[in-house]
Amino acid sequence: MATLRQLRTRVGSVKNIQRVTNAMKLVAAAKMRKAQDAIVAARPYAKQLDRVLQRLTQSIESQHPLLSERPVERVAVAVVTADRGLCGAFNSNVCRLAHHEIAKSANVDLITVGRKGRDYFRRRGQAPVLHHADVFRPLSFDHALEISHDLSQRFLSGQVDQVLLVYSEFRSVAQQRPVVEQLLPVVPKSAEAEEGKPLDYIFEPEPAALLETLVPLHVNYQVWRALLECSAGEQAARMAAMDNATKNAGDLIDGLVRQMNKKRQASITLELMDIIGGAEAVSQ
Image (cartoon, rainbow, N blue to C red; front, side, top):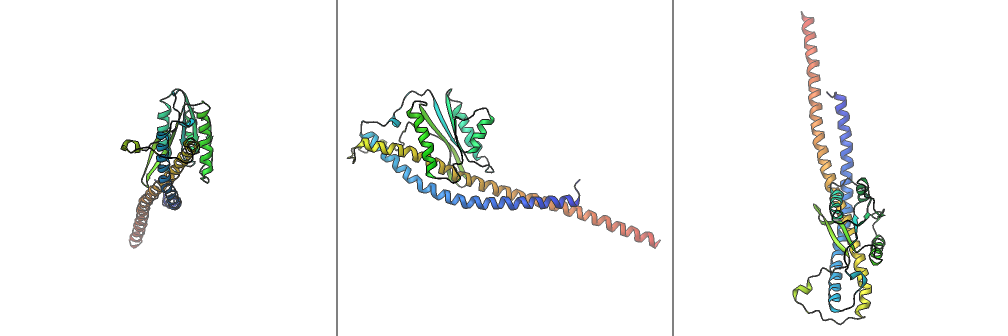
């Protein structure tokens, strides 16, 4: 059974841990607000870009190489995770979904973004063919350009016939949902054509020239949006995890303090009994 000194040491240790987890929660909250503002600002642009691309592809006959679909014999799966842990099941949820997608195809090129995804698959004997390191320190659009360029070149060269992007979508502070999206070939997701609106437009410059600009831009921005979603989701998950850890530390401290008080009370009671017993022996 723990002594009074051991209990005091444990209380001090847990209080130190509680201060650390509380500080991490505050830091994550500050970073999350900044990342949340970035992703909220990026979503309307991505939606409008997809809508323009939808109009363009339905109004012309020429096609961009990144739009061409072909029989899928080899798939590239790009998994976007965080570089750090201590954020609950954020990384493991994405990795499990990616693992499920990889199991669907016999020929897969695994590409990881973020250290946690790379380590997850290495432990299971699935080394990635390419790993993008230190993407989130700090996160910039140049990283998205590098990743999208590599994925596009693999598709254009015929190394892969389809590129899937697996990441965690930021829904709210309390919810991050792992998703799988087809990055290449590009398939615009706008529903305008289903609404029966006419798609007769006059384009300036020529539609083919617009495709040369908009399609690569669309790919770049989809990767950028995935990185922003991951960044915001990571900080939100870490904030929630550290908040739970801080509360659990408080509960543990309360339990240790109760044990310590009981131990101190028992010690005082024994001392009083010794004093009373000694006083009675003297009086006799």
